[in-house]
Amino acid sequence: MSQAIRFHYRGKTHHVQDLPATRTVLQHLREDLHCTGTKEGCAEGDCGACTVVVGELLEDGRLDLKTVNACIQFLPTLDGRALFTVEDLRQPDGCLHPVQQAMVECHGSQCGFCTPGFVMSLWGLYLRHESDGVAPTQREIDDALSGNLCRCTGYRPIIDAAQRMGQLPKVAFDRAQVSQALAALRRDTPLAFTHENQTFHAPRTLEQLAQLRHALPQARLLAGSTDVGLWVTKQMRDLGDLIYIGQVAPLREVGEHDGWLEIGAAVTLEQAYAAAHRHYPEQLSELWQRFASLPVRNAGTLGGNVANGSPIGDSMPWLIALGAQVVLYGVGGQRVMPLEDFYLDYQKSALQADEFVQAIRIPLPRADVRFRTYKLSKRFDQDISAVCAAFALTIVDDQVVAARIAYGGMAATPRRASRAEAELVGQAWDQARVRAAMAALAQDFAPLSDMRASAGYRLRTAQNLLYRYWLETRTEAPLAPQDVRAFAVTTRG
Image 1 (cartoon, rainbow, N blue to C red):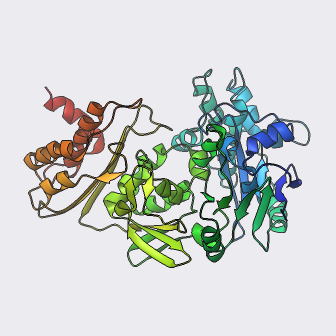
Image 2 (tube, rainbow, N blue to C red):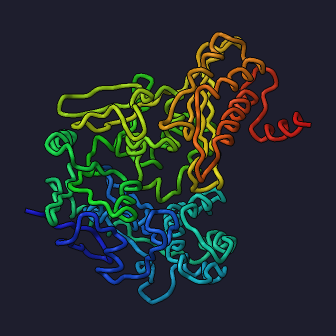
């Protein structure tokens, strides 16, 4: 028998039955509940007009609130959670919330279509600083708005509003009331929601997930829905049965042991990058900020990114360069393999029919490994890479002892540059040897031309990124990243 989806909405428990499992949160808001403040712009998680805030009660009792794109989130993923939309910001006396008032005062809205999404992104930022009273930094503002597009304002007045909202009289958010409501929604048994022969399964333990995967090998695994959601909204695909991993507690854990950082497959990209950034702050700071947008990172998972194995995914090059491992699990038990061996061909992996990704293991920093990551794309924010590169060389006494070089966007899968690595290992870390390795990249890769970049551009920039890495890590007078551009202009004459 199908169970009802239950979530906290507009101050009470909302029940949903007799709707498709792949109905999006946005469709439900606009078409079923007639709450049309949340807009549809792109239906693929890019424009931010549909931004909402989802709340979840964590195991330690804390209330986690994060912005997500309603247009690609399937309705059953809200089970046991809270949903907040722009309608929730209206105050009991009819006044505007400080976020909305700041948008008015700073003239942050023109045509108004994108405004509800911006308001919800700013509300998410407002909540993060609600208790400490500290004004958000420029980076925090840019990051919070990275998933929202506007064709009218030029963004400056919206950024002004982000700075202004904290200066207005405070409006408190009743976290205790929401936490209490969510505690009452906790289930003892997994959700199984069925509509017209399609079932949405939400197991809660690793064993339940393994048994479901074994019994339903053709079912679609679902994590953050940032990729799978588009299969419905853009490709109109019938996904069949779904197995949602977002409620499996062991897959949401982050831990350290035996020199590894282990990140569960259901840990969000934002949480995963935050954990990795603590160990590799200089190397991952910019890549973390430039990976998609905050709402996408709040929903998508590192495990899903790895399992999907997109050749232009930004996580795999740096994971492969560091020598990360992927942990697979099924009814037959657990197996571990190097991430670079996981990818067999375009959208083909070593994952067996009854297996799933359990975790990603990342080596903790070693003093002799010089690690860097680089991303090239047309826009700074929320853009897919033309080339993503990662380098991790072990250099002792100015000699290359080991080399791991990985690229995304250069082949059918994220891949190491074995010939370039061979040119470097056992050799001096000098310009002549780096030039030889740059030439060898033409044998490692034969990139394609597409809408993001030509084959020639990809190869040339892949070579130049290796040279930039040398400039930043050479023993004699290494250059800071901000100085590399000036050096390149000077040496070209």
